[in-house]
Amino acid sequence: MGSSKVSHSFVQELLSRIDIVDIISHYLTLKQSGRNFVALCPFHPEKTPSFVVSPEKQIFKCFGCGVGGNAITFVQQYENLSFFEAVKRVAEIAGVELPREAFSEDSSTVEVEEAGLKAARYFYSHYERVEDYLLERGVDRKTAEKFLLGYAPPGYLRELKIKDEALTQLGLKSSKGREFFRERLIIPIFNHSGKVVAFAGRALKEGQEPKYINSPESSLFKKNSTLYGFYQSKEFILKKRKAIIVEGYFDVISLFRLSVYGVVAPMGTSLTENHVRFLKRYTHSPILMFDGDSAGRKATIRSAGILFKFGAEPLVVQLPDGEDPDSMARSSPDLLKELLSRPIPFIDWAVETVKSLPSVERPELLRQVALAVAELRDINPFLFKDYLSRLSAEFGIDETWLKSQLPRVRRREESGLSEEPIPIYEKAFLRALLEGVALPVEVSPNIFVSQKVAKLYSLISQTGERDATALQTLYPELSALISDVLFMEISEEELRRYVCRVLVKELERRLKRVSDISEKVTLKKLVFELKKGNFEIVEQLQTIN
Image 1 (tube, rainbow, N blue to C red):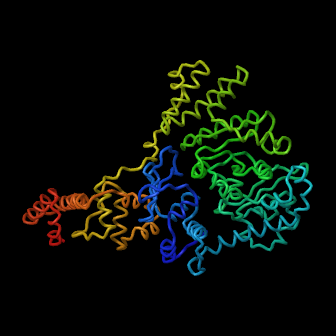
Image 2 (cartoon, rainbow, N blue to C red):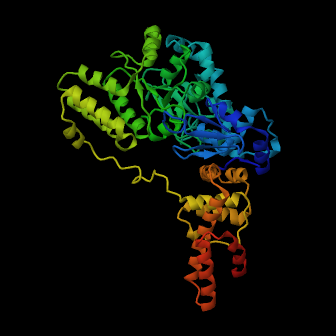
Image 3 (cartoon, helix red, strand yellow):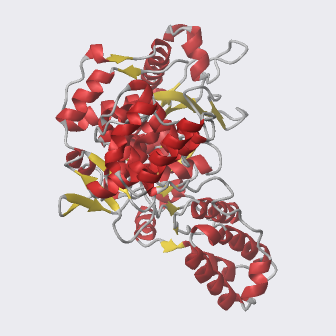
């Protein structure tokens, strides 16, 4: 399927009409610090603010994790949106009207999304067929409407009058052309932007197997990246920075009915790394609330390990044996709310849980807890040591032996997660370019240590574009680098010295390829002067092009 686009001119106009401080303040609490504003970074855990917003330059930069960009790229990363969706979201927040001519949406994508909403509303129009069942489960009409719960009657393919391609994309029609969700309770699946991209169907009759079926994955629906209920609680999660992870559809729906918001569930699968990458943008301490049985305990430990791997520190709510969030929402709503009001850190939950087990079952669960904690070894070594010491003390296990039993987790550098170091003189050289300094010679991208610097320099050379905002819009993957360069505190003298250093590397590159003696002598003299920081000699370089 194709993609949606927005005109560059409109993006530039939008950025000129908004204030980045206003946009980011919609998500974070900013405090003024001199000419800039600061906040705790939403993209990595920290206790001291390193996230800086410059109203003067209309950019942001985190000096802890390196992320940076403009208002659009911030919203794009914070809400996990496409660039197209982020532009629309920024315009919405700022109250800027969207001219239709500025947007060109992929027709096939729009057609499927419109078909998804049409089908969801059609199934909801047959709500009466499942009303009694839903009421038995404690779901009232208002809640059902919020999630567009409905019923798939026989003959729905004929009545929907949706094109075959859209029916297939949405999974409404089986590979054999049959009604895939016939006579089932329908649960529309909204993506994180609020588009209906798939469906789930629950059995209503005896012998109707399996109990739940889902639309197959498509270009619009990926199970390992979609969290059910996120769209309905999006604003709450954005404002409160809080999320509760449960296991199933009705866990989400039942808690919503109790006015417990921020609840999300994986799509019929375990929590994945993609889910965690997405959630970590909103909260660093999500609450895990799984079923109160052995399977729920194992799911809690496994999920905690994935959260630790990405720097999050989960909290846990332990439900009574045999209960799940859905059943407790109906039978003991007050107790459920009380438990949710006092979640405990994972390590406290783990110690209590292991101690509550018969002695024969303890070693295996303790091993699983230790494996989950091992994910912290390189992400947060201090917390890793603290947790390991706690397990050692609580269960009388030698800490050294316990550590030796853990598999070695690959370091971040080995897994390719670390940022490449960028020499300060290369960043200063880019700063000079962005500030309009004219270069006397064209340098080769191959002289740069940083591949990102080489790429940005090449793009600037090819397009002639030196406006930072325009470059961040055109090349969002380089936004962080551009912000980093613009936030540099550097004097004019230092800037010239670093430009000279880059020019020296270019001339030394040329020296290796020159055979003419007089030309070599000339280049060596220029290199000598540039190494002394003689910026005035730069004008003479124009003669060697």
